[in-house]
Amino acid sequence: MPLAPLGRPPRLVLRFALYTGAVLLAAGLAILWTVNHEVAARAQRTVETQARLFAEQNLRRQLLTSDFTKPVRGSRRAVLDDLFRQRILIPGIVGTRLFNSSGTITYAARHQLIGTKVPYLADVSGVLAGVPKRRVTRTVSWRGQKNVKVLQSLIPVRQAGSMKPIGALELDQDYRAVAVTVGEAKSRLVLILGIALLVLYLALFPILRRVTGELASRNRRLHEHALERGSLLEAERAARAEAESIQRLLADQNDRLRELDRMKDEFVSLVSHELRTPLTSIRGYLELFRDSGDLTPKQREFLKVVDRNAQRLLELVGDLLFLAKIDAGAFEIDLDEVDLAQVVEESIEASRPMAESRKIELVASIGNPPPLVGDRTRLAQVLDNLVSNALKFTEAGGRVEVTLSSEDEHVLLEVKDTGLGVSPEEQPLLFERFFRSSRATENAIPGTGLGLTITKAIVERHGGWITLESEGSVGTTVRVELPTKAARRADVAGRELLDVAAVKR
Image (tube, rainbow, N blue to C red; front, top):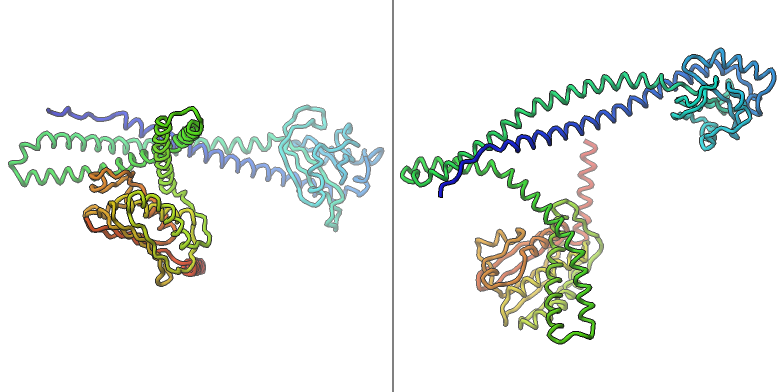
C-alpha cells in the first residue's frame, strides 16, 4: 500500500515561535522589575542623603537639647518656625518634626502635631540608637495639603562633638522628586529592553523556520526512500548510500525521541502518584470486607485474590515513583551506621516462606563484616530484590545461597542461584528499566523489569557497584560491593582536601 506524502507542519513553527516569545517576554519582565526596583531604591537613597546632609548642615548648631525634652512653646517655637520654614522647608520638603526618645513630637512645622505621639513608635528606638530610617507613606503637609505621598526620613540629631543622639528629626520629602527620576530611568529602560527583545526575537524566528523546515524536508526524504526501496535493491551501492542517509536522518531524530522519553517519564510519575491514594483506599476497604463475617469462603478467596493484585499494583506504583525521584535527582538516603549482617538475616527470614512453598533450598553464609554507613531501609530493599529475583527464577529443587563477607575495606554481598540463567546477549540489558529476559517471558515469570534498575541506583548512591554473572541453565550470581564505614570516611576526607586545595589555587 503506497504511503501518503508528508507535508510541512506549520504548527510546529508557530509553537516554537510562541514558546520563544513567551520565554523572552518573561525574561524581559523579570529584568525590568529588577532594574526598576534597584533604580527606585537608589533614587530614594539619593534624595534622602541630599535632604539629610542639607538638614544636618543647617541644624547642627541651631538645635538645643531642650528642644527635645518637652514640647516647644512661646518664643523658642517662633525661633524654630523661622529656622525650619525659611531654611529647611525648601521646595520638595513638605513637612518636618522633632521628636524625643519617648516618641513625643516636641516641634512640628504643622503646630497641631506638637505634643502628640509619632505614628511609628516601633522605629523610634532604632533611630535614637543612631540608625537613620526611611519609608514611603502618605501624610498631611505643613500647609494642610492632605494625602501627600512622601519619602519620610528619620534622622538622628546629635550635638556638635557628641556621638549620642539627643533626639530625632523627621523630614517629609515630596515623592514626586523620586518618581521623576524613576520614571525617566524606567522609560529609557523599557525602550532599550523592548528594542533588544524585538531584535532577538526577529533574529531567532528565521532560525526556527529553517530548523523546522529542514526537519520536515528530511522526513519527506525518509518517506520517499521507503517507497523506492524495492527498486533500489538492484543497485547495491546506491542502496547502501541511501541506507547511510537514512541512518543519519534517524540520528537527527534522537533529540525528539529523548524529549518524548522525558515526557513519558513525567506522565508515569504523575499517574503513579495519583494511583497510590485510590489503591491504598481499595486495599483498606478490601480488608474491611474480609474482616466482616457475612462472606462465604469462596467470596473470601475472591477478595484475597483482589487484595493480592492490588498489593502488586501498589508495589509497581511505588517502584515507578522511586524511578521518578532518581530521574529528578531527588533520590536521598538517610545515612547511619548499619549492621548488614542483621539486614541479611532479616531478609532471609522474610523470604523463607516463599522458598519453602517453591521447594527451594535458601541458605546464608554470613561472616563478620565491619560496619558500614548507609540507609538501612534501602539496603534491605536491595537484599529483598536480589533474593526474590533469585527465588522467582529458580525451579523447584534448586538452591539460592546468600553470602556476606568483607575484603579490602569493602563489604561483599553475593546472591547465587541455580535458576534459568540469562543469555550473554541479554546480560548488558538487565539493569535497564522495564527490560525482561526472554526466558522470563517464555516461562511466564511475573515481574516489571524494575527491580534490578532500582537495586543498581541504591547501590551506586551508597558509593558501591553491582555486577552480574550468568550462564543459561546453570544459574546466576549477583555481586554487590559497598565501602565500609572507614573507607567512606576516608573518601569524604579526601574530597574535602581536594576542595580546599582547589580553593587555595
